[in-house]
Image 1 (cartoon, helix red, strand yellow):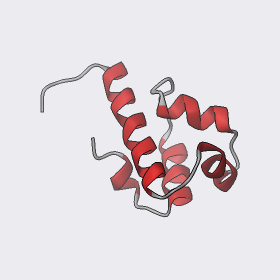
Image 2 (image 1 turned 60 degrees about the horizontal axis):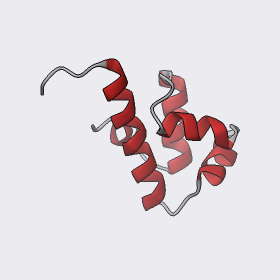
Image 3 (image 1 turned 90 degrees about the horizontal axis):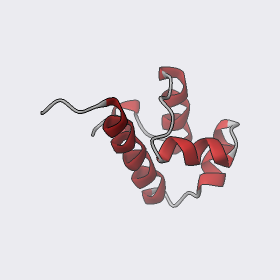
Length: 74
């Protein structure tokens, strides 16, 4: 894998989370509700505008009913 800058990695992570969420048939609002966040938080994450903590990623994985490893397969 070629080195990527931080911004590009965050965008790829966000795109992967969005794809996984859509495959589960969930909206941003539904995912946010499932993990006690607001829709704007999910929107920023999927846009690659935030660098999520490990804890936040575990919450997302739990909300989607998947392993955290699936989130970071980019």
